[in-house]
Each structure stands twice: as C-alpha cells, then as structure tokens.
Image (cartoon, rainbow, N blue to C red):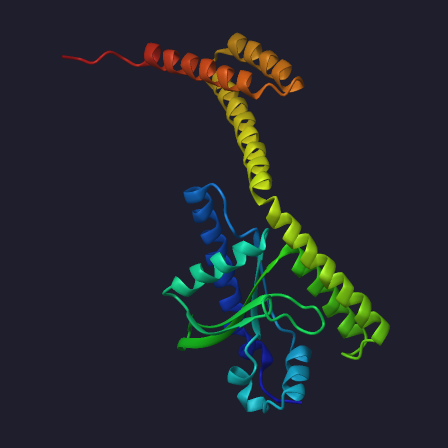
Length: 271
C-alpha cells in the first residue's frame, strides 16, 4: 500500500470537482436565460475512491508515483442532457472555455463499446489554486443522456459486484438493455420539438402562478387587504379551471393597483 497522505493528495481533485460543478451549473443557468432552453439537464461530480484508484492503477500498470498523470479520472464530472444532439453542443461549449484545456476526447457514442456503453468523454487539464500555488489537475468530463447514464450506472454496479467478470448471460442482457436505451434516445430525439414546446409551456404556466401569488402578497404589504382577498378568490377560481390567460389578466390588474397605490403615497415634487 502506498504510504502517501491520501487526504492531502486528493484535496486538489476535490477542489477541482467542486469548482467545475459550479461552473457548469452556471453555464446551464446562462444558456437557459439566453435561449430559454439549456442543453444541460443537471451536473454531478465525484472524486474517485482510494480503492478504485489503486485497482485502476493495477489494471493499467500505472506506478503509484505516476498517479497524477496516469489516472485521468480521479476527478470526474458528469453532465446529463435530455437529447443526444445536446451532447455535441455541450462539448463545443467546453472546448471554447478559457479556464480549462481539453487534452483529448473519447467518443463512445459513435464508437460505442462492445458492452453497449455509450458516453462522450473529455479529458481536461484544470488549474487549481492551492495554498502552495497553482496546480494542474486532470479531470474527466462525461457527457451523456439520462438513458445512457441510467444504463452506465447499472453496469458499473454489476461490474463491481462480479469484479469485472460478468456472467455471459448477464452481458447479453445488459447489451440488449443498452440497445433499448439507444432506441429510447432516438425516439426522444424524433419528438424533440414537441417535448421542448410542452416543457416551455409548463414552465411559463408555473412562472405565471408564482408571479400572480407574489403580486397578491404585495397587496397585503400596501395594506390593500380587501383587494388582496378578492384577488386571491379570483386566483383560486382560475386555478381550478387552469385558466392561465385569466391569471395573466389578474396579474396585470393587481400590478396596476399596486402602481396606483404607490403614486398616491409618493409625495409631490417641490418646486
């Protein structure tokens, strides 16, 4: 067993994972504001367990003193997308970033593994600012659809259980499941526009509800209690029938009431 201080060794990787997660989550928010749709569904990250690092080093004949360069996925980021098409877009956004350097890519979507594994991997070099100065850390970014991720998670668990020696019958079933996941992704891509329209409609309706309720709450703040009660009753009726157009009208009326009340309360300008 290596005698290094593993806690200290892994600290830069932990920092890299946390910083990259924040950056990609911010990217998601920015794209959503710019395009009303973000190709990133969600982001996760992890630092490889010590036992997994040692196992991989043994499998690939990586000397323990060469772990920093020989094991490229000690720091791992996973970016999930709704559609296969989104994976290429996200990869392009990552290539354009100035705060990391893409060393190389592995396309397991076009060239999927014999097991059925599909994913898009990018090995990047990321600078971490430590107490002792800047340190370049290798990290692996995996970009995949939700279906690909579900399959890969199950396969990983089974490989761990069987110590990389899956029974042939299990391998066959997993391969069929991978093909089914691929068919699902293709089917979702074929109705992509309908899905996006439906999702945007749901989000717009949710935003209207939030805005109306926030406006009604403001009426109480301005002591317009009877108006707030009336507005709340109207909202309840509109909510029962899911009349979102009526809610938009109600929101406009409530905002007008608040605006008028503000004008009454504002003192006149002195000449």
